[in-house]
Image (tube, rainbow, N blue to C red; front, side, top):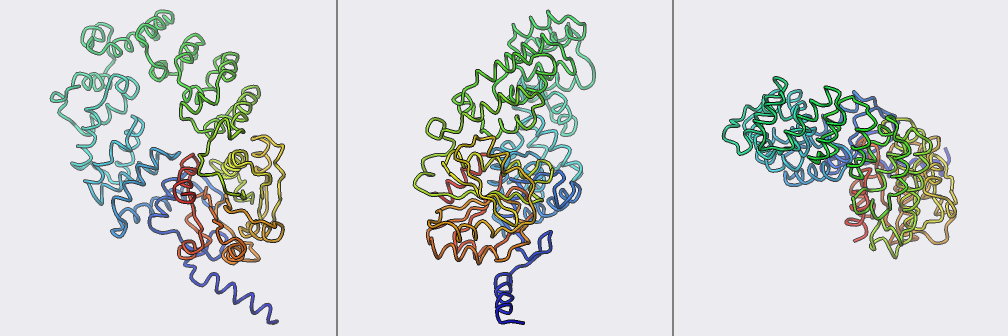
Length: 512
């Protein structure tokens, strides 16, 4: 064996000697621990099938880790509370934050009670909480019942109509003394309708204190009798919100009703129901409304472009897809429509999406969709001219004259193996001036590197000492390609998530 080969083996040994696990490809890795692993589960905790695990394995692994982390007395409970709340309010998923809340009650009923109303926001949240609690713990202690009672005390007419089933289930399980509640009559209505249908006379006479409930009951009666025009008149007079009407009509696909519903929809709701509106014959109205939406309206409604991107992915009509692409393209000008704030100025950037097989596999959702979206947003907003798409090789993409969706489609292609050091090595070899901040968007399951990420990044830092590496982790497998000590010493940051919370975290931790 030559001395060169001996040195290469020794380098690999030195780079990975503190590794405490192997990833799904059998390559040395570091298991994420503590708050970092908790953040990963809460923010990218999809429970569907992924490239390396099926949905059953995915759920089992994450629940096991989540329980161990929440019960770990070395992790401050205040930090756990903050992460759970942040994940529910800023992240994309509801399941993991709600599951974490259920587990938190085992460690601290007090902490559980303090954040319950910040995590359990909608009636659907409440229903999921009840189901998860029953399946995972099996019963309700005093803290859980008190929290549910507090939630019920705040129930209003809107919730009583939209989430009636969920609230009725909560009443049945927690058995509150609703006669002592200020909204006791409302809760009686909710529970009574679980037992039997409310007739017209009862709806009018008994619940006249709640005009929207009276109107909602009349609306349902008219719908069930086929009196569509009378139902619409009641809805208009009482100004029943679109959310309520959707819940009240069930599977009815009447075009006139859905037209009224569409007129009452907020922007986010309209985007969510595009396919449904088209299916009932409102395609022309949908396209007209899409044409009228401005980026200013999107920003005012606090809808991050990712939501439009998801709508584009889900849209079934080609004309609607075209309009959504047109709307997304309006966010390409960072001066007119800044998605990123001023902290992002005065830096140079490299954007390096992972396009290997594990990223482009059709999981739920495909990781390459997320990588493509983040690449497109960052590239257009930061005026980057070249994107380095990588697998076990690097494909530099000239994006100067490409649109938002063209960049996404360039990134969204099948690749080969995974060598996370490859874009760093490519820049070392081909760039005279190395960018200050390097974004790598990946599932972190590297296995085909000729040179370790640690060694490649050390060489990069020698040439650009102020450089920072930001790994945007989109899969949540729990493996890291570098250890925490090395990351802290050499300016390597890992952020988890699929929404604008990623950019906010980068602004706070990397750019401040």
